[in-house]
Image (tube, rainbow, N blue to C red; front, side, top):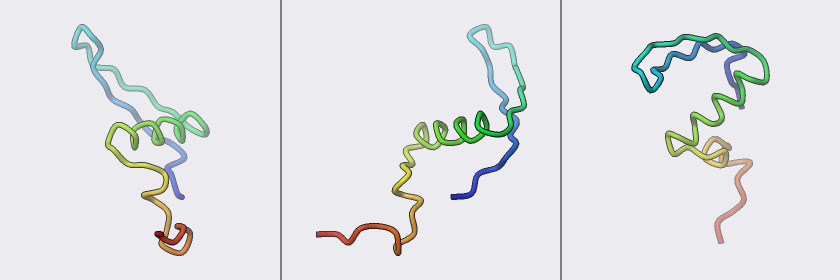
Length: 56
């Protein structure tokens, strides 16, 4: 599964202050993984049909 090696994350805190931070390496990968969960995407959704186990 390909993920961007470098990302920029922009977010608002509880005081509506905008923050922007850059992440790279493992931190970038983890953030993208967790973002997938927020969007309802699971690791198994990204597997190709070849790698997925056959349905019973």
